Length: 120
Length: 250
Image 1 (cartoon, rainbow over the protein chains, first blue to last red):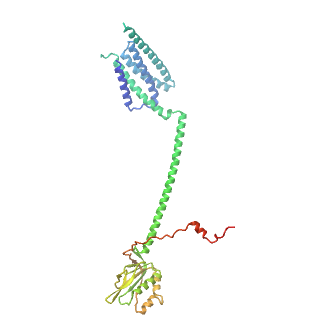
Image 2 (cartoon, each protein chain N blue to C red; image 1 turned 90 degrees about the horizontal axis):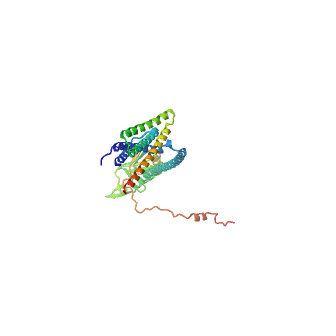
Image 3 (cartoon, chains in turn orange, cyan; image 1 turned 90 degrees about the vertical axis):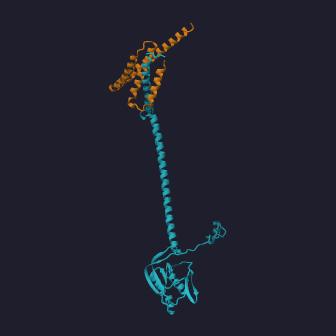
């Protein structure tokens, strides 16, 4: 059941490496914060699936708005002289690790449940 | 397998993440190789290495241009040598008579009625050589170091030959040289002209500003000649033969 998303990831990677478009070097910083935000959204989505309150609309809107807003905020911060970049890194980083921990917990819980149910 | 409701959005999201990640990878790897992002120490080392390389290359350029100039010089020397050899060859050609020549000189015309023997022709030619003639021809036969002048007899008819070829009258001797000198050489009192006048032969002399002397028709070929080189004496014996070396040193 995870086959389709993983296939999507691989196809995305192939498309990305096939694209000859080069991100201008000054925007690489904002691009990196966008990547961090998108990763956060992905892990949030996985967590939601494991906790059985997944909503596709929430995931998609969250993914795109988070990504764009993170990049825009970092850019705006640079314009205004406020290092919002670090704030975004911090916020998304903390949420990312929190999500990962939750995912781990949920997976562990499921594994144990299966293990204890099967012998019966 | 039924597609669960979360799979489609997840796939879309993963697709976008894949694109973003690979783009970011590319950009980041470019940043790492970009000069702006290098550390100062690395940049200094790079500059040092490159300037060293440049110095080496400049030295190489210097060496190679030196080599080039040497080569060009030797080429020029070679050209000079060739031109010298060509000049030498031209000189030798004029001397051996393998080229036709042109210049001021004297023509001597001998008619059929004049009692002239082959020995008189030889005398005239010797006199011309002595008077500074540089090239002589008789009726188109170039006179060189191996020319023969003699006579043949046919039915009491004597005819003069040059290189075993009969001469037709009038015999015209052409000599290139200073015309005045050549004429004086022949007409000097008691000279060849006076001698011939005793036999009532009066060759007709004419000074000409430009006459041509033809080339030898059959250049001699050599089969037995070899250059002779005198055996070299060893330097030590040559020194010991010097006078004064015989005396024992006190």
